[in-house]
Length: 329
Image 1 (tube, helix red, strand yellow):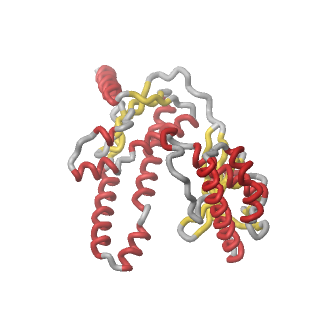
Image 2 (cartoon, rainbow, N blue to C red; image 1 turned 60 degrees about the vertical axis):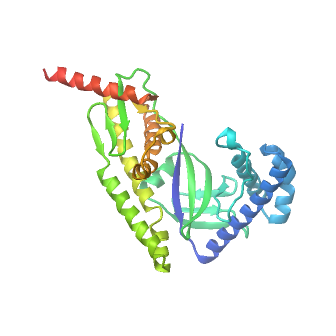
Image 3 (cartoon, helix red, strand yellow; image 1 turned 180 degrees about the vertical axis):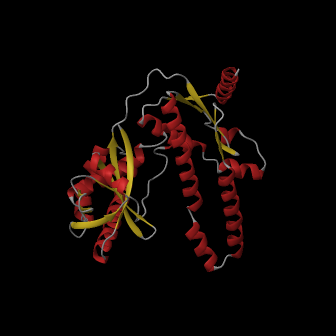
């Protein structure tokens, strides 16, 4: 099974919006209290934190039973997830708008009417309309919905619903492996000669970098507003580009019965010694994102993925060229 996050936008009246905002504030205020108790007592296990804080959270912050349980779990996950070396080296803090998890006990769906019912600090909000694309609605209809997160982003509330999607059977005997050479000038070059140019992506990055410099130098209120408005646009464009490229790579591997060999580039930013303009390009290089997109898309359709030394990918490319030449002769 693969987990997919489906973001949907809540479209509601002012009262529901205010109630959702108050709910996020109350839950995250409780999360900060729970984090303080966990940090001072050095108790980071979920059940241990629950024992220390559950009653106080319900009484002082007005959370329902399930909301308190999910908030405690959120804090425990914050201390127990990520790199083991850095897990508990600093106290976790939550802003008022940090995402709040919900489950089937305090959020329910009516997919036919495109509405949901959700617990709030001021009572349950029922028949709350939401907006999503048709393909997103189909995913929600045909797959079990697990935990969902209430998120406030750029003036609107969203629910990020996590669904479990069944994977296809893994191809245990691929014909070979399709090598993926990831770069900056060319986003990806396959061992069969297929090339995905990064010219347009790099042009957009350079144009945005120049615009940011001008706006930061100007420093007026309108310039700062424009910087905020444009924030994240480049990252979304790069993410969409990586999605499109990864989909084409996985589709080709599936069609030809091949597995996928990705370059293992872990630590390359620390190893490289470059001039400042080159460092900018290296730090904006989305090789990890592209690799993760290829991996999860491949798992869903049963295509095996391996990480290999970059030299092995180049060797696959030379072998593929020799094969094509022999086929031509």
